[in-house]
Image (cartoon, rainbow, N blue to C red; front, side, top):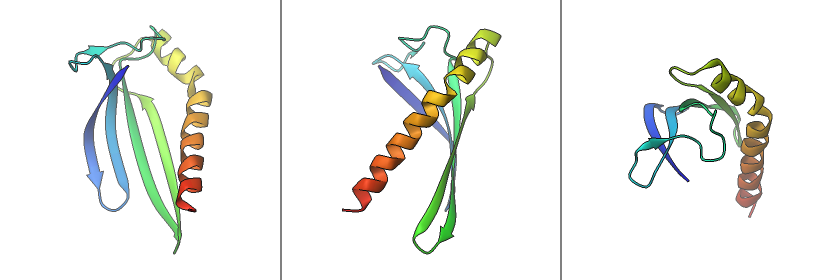
Length: 100
């Protein structure tokens, strides 16, 4: 499984916006190999907000990008709980790593 990101905006110090698609090893856009009704493209916005001298809030917004069918949007929206767990788990691992 391969993915491709197209960075649309990088604003110092606090914003990153990119589109994301699945692709093959030659960068040809494909569908999610295990979810045929997954939308073709997603838009991710990451915002960093300083909350103190040693604390930063990371907010991730992930949405369907471009044209998508009602079924594709429904598939994406139903999966948001799992995506939230995935993002949270990744940040929990990063936080643990940074403690050492």
